[in-house]
Image (cartoon, rainbow, N blue to C red; front, top):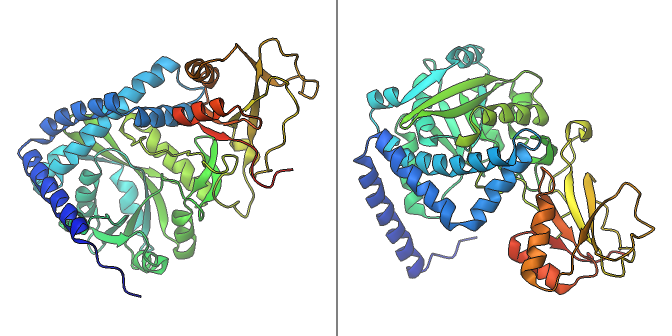
Length: 422
């Protein structure tokens, strides 16, 4: 079936975007990597100032990842550094993408290279587990240079919606010999590439909706890509992790990390966590990694692995605040979801007797009279920050509509009575 050709307006927009990108790339190319990083740091801090949405996402991600490890003050400082590094790595990537080999070698250092060399010597192929971390263009340009003779490096990428930018990006990545596979390529092509003794990098830190396996990641159950584990088991390829850490503005360290156990999805995510902990401030935390579904927030998209869910290793439960009506009547239960790892808390109006149906050890927050939306928002914010882990969603089966509207305005998912509930 043929695709509908793009409209003139869309083609014009693509060309304008492409022209703007080339102008910015040319301008950034006049800077040294250090200068590009310093400019990027200011861009990142400006984004933090202007985008409340991304501030919420970064704060939530860091609270989940480091709950019980870092204080609120440490998390706030780390969040600021995340924006600073994100901007620095973004702008520096435009600079390092065109660096000659000698300049690239001065900007990038390698640690644990023998791990990769030993893995390549088996001839069975090697899988690199990657995160959106550090200067990704420095990694893409440097990676092919450290291959053993006759070994090719490859990467899986997501095609850009703008075809002109996509062609430019592919050409830039391939200039040092990196082979690119489009994300939706047939997995048999990945397996064939590995069986030829090649090295394939797989970015594994994004949500894997639908096809993902539900395993612990930073102690929280979530859907994770099974691709590295599946390919390793089917081809015999060895698995290692790759971190990219900023050593100083304009200088990065690429470090290789071993997989210490069998190549299962859970173990690959443990390895990825090790990679990201190497330099949390270099991780691109601006994607909503533990995103809650707006339609059915109690469900985690993904499938249960054959060996079951490692609940004991998933010690960070999801928090659900049940907003009780002033009559405190019993609430209709949410549809059962697997995994059912919720910590339920309850908001009870001041002066309302504690309901007899509530368990004795239930966590109850007594709220004041809430006659304005700002007061409601402040109360939800207070409850959200009463624990190291953030609230995942609010369940308001009896309303009121004002509470539902406030939650949605705060970017907090909210559920009423799901369709089909008893």
